[in-house]
Length: 513
Image (cartoon, rainbow, N blue to C red; front, top):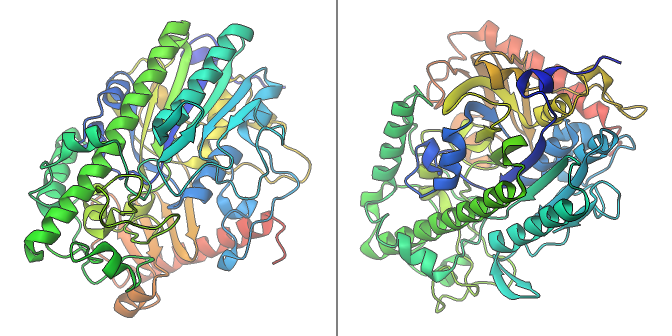
């Protein structure tokens, strides 16, 4: 057996791992990624760790979560099946805690699950303790034994209980804590005191706010591209005309210029963004509680904390669960407001499009890695390209198991990811030969500085045609300049490569349709 040396190189001991995931948070929402939302706890982790600038999710909740936990692209484990016809679990599929258990770790899950081809993760034997398999996803005020709580608070409470149990009964044993928040996924709901903090901050509108975020991102060195154009011709996914009377005249399903809105629309839209900001602010404070607990346990220095979002901010406008009461205070439990395309394009600034699409606005995520005893860099950026598939090999590497010795079950294909551990030491140490995307026929492939992308949305097809676009990400990460006509050979080369990987990854799952 070839023992991994990354953990020894970085700290001399194996770390605990806490993986914190947010839901539908935009690339530039946190303060440490250019946002104006107050996120002092995330900013502190970033200032004493590293931030990745080119890290990717899959563009949607469930495929991202499956890639994080299994180490495979979602189609490989049939978590993004053709035509969304259902989910099949390959017999060889296992999750991170399964492998870590063999390395002596305990596993805890708190929060949203949404890995649709698995059963209850605790009863299934993947996690030692799990809560959230059947979480209330249609609202953010959870009914708990202690009364109603905001989602981030309830999820954090359970994670803290797990840590307390670990300290009492398993001290000295390394742990993997997976904390999966539902915020700020629609409906935008928050405690009134948190909403009040942000009321009035967004009255200038999304055009001004996205410009400011873009400028801050450039000053931070996180991006060097132009600010993408708004796309006012794209209608919000999920919207239908019956929603109009329920939401009233303040709602608008297009990302038009702020100056085109009526005063009533401006007030309504600014309030929605205030609620979105309040959700992130509150979740950041809950993350602070987790940090405090790690410190109290005396394990903070030896814990690797990852933080990311499962996809970009959403442009969806729809009504689910108990519906929407227009007479109730905005953001309260009786309401079902959605961020929408105007603020979605701001939250994903400076990138193009949103959740569901495989343009950068859909698939680019902040990634913070913080580990005092292992990551000596403080506040540095990492420009290495990475993807959710990299977490399993990274965590196993640091747990002392080399990539080639991860005990994959019989029939499992090779893991497609890479360990990110070398990037903790030095920028530019991790190089993928490709990063692949396909979410419900929104397709993309990144190879070095080149990216091809094609959208499945019917509106987009009417505008652009059913075709691939080619972008040079070194100078055009906002994906505004299509080079497919200037470089037809490069385009065809990458399209052929995408199809090759598509065929391989689809066949890996064994799904027969």
